Image (cartoon, rainbow over all chains, first blue to last red; front, top):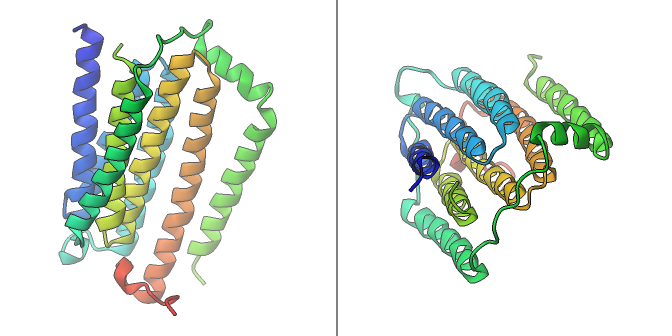
Length: 163
Length: 100
């Protein structure tokens, strides 16, 4: 086993353990903190996949933006101390059965597909290639994405405003 | 670098865990966190297949899904805050005004 393989599996264990903690801890605030750990671990997985730009995007947008947004929402809707922050889960057995069935379905498909062909290397610097596609053939979807973000944030502001 | 199937299995596990969270959580914010995990698993798949084919277009789609997820979380949390102001609860079991 090479060092990269050991690193990947260590990272995968952290990712899966923190994901489980997100859905299982009773304290909602701890749940968000474990989500931050899971998102950073996913960013490290992106590093193993030779996508350092996505690692940066993941840290800035997910671990930075989304986690801060959720923390604000919790502080606005729940008291940090006291019983309100505790959240209950219902139908644990039913949920586990459905989730396990979905996983078995995906795993069965993977087994059926057989081994993957050898990975081809990226042609040249992948960040440069990504920038050229973003501002070249995919420039219009990229701009539309900006419009979507502005519209969503304005809509969120409109929803949450004080009357 | 481990093979493609290792990434796909990890992503499938994260997706299943997120689905479990969406199905079992009763707090609306908890459900949103489960959706986050599921979208995250999809991103791992996109990047893994981009690496397999040596094609940066897959990374481009991962960037798109990340940005759309951020928009979705912003709108979802705004709705949660409004619901909390009106109903004083974000327990999904008690938000059944639209039930016929």
